[in-house]
Image (cartoon, rainbow, N blue to C red; front, side, top):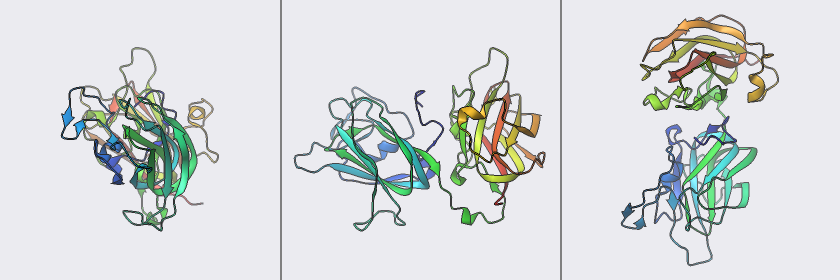
Length: 330
């Protein structure tokens, strides 16, 4: 993930593992529409060609010879509000579109029809070749589908859609849920380090795929310890904590602790690091083992909480963190 990403506190809503799919494109002659949301960073292979010409890692339409323009439609796997977008034209130099725009809609069907009402998200914006285009969005949505227009044609390596999940809370009922799960609206906000693996991997659905599918920090050579702070999907009381070190064998943390706080007014990620935040111990410093799910039932009862902080000692990798509990509506 680019280190200069201004939307890093938000979730990648376009991830295929969340169920997001590119369901339509006017044209994909040179490069398949599915590559537009590929989770991997784009690559350039100088001598790779296929039956249609130069192979490119992105979505690329043929050269238009009429007055129209190309577009594709993306169906999000989770309902979400947008906070930012990156239109990434890396490796597209003489074949990138000079302009692009974005629209969103709410639609119960896989494919919106002619009667669908689309809302403008980003008006026609100028693009450059081989570049990131970080464009802020003021929480528009929620949307089920995104329509991405390019003018008039060309290629885009990746479209990254950053935002927050809008869960259907009516299905939660009174049952215990994972208050941190991405699909429920939990998200990582800030961490001390993510040299080898993103903090956003910690609350993804399911077990981790490999060591790169978790959060891993660089080796510490000085004092202190690493940490990550999360916003829960909703205010709730915690009943159990699970810390999963699957795939981490020679690099798992020796110990971990979890703190929590209930904030009535939201704080920015940087403000949550301040020493004045009244964190309370939810799970005291506890020993971890390699490649193992650690379930801690009945953590310290401190009442309703909105944010949690996991501290690891001194560094290392964790694949998943689960905070199970019940939503508090009052």
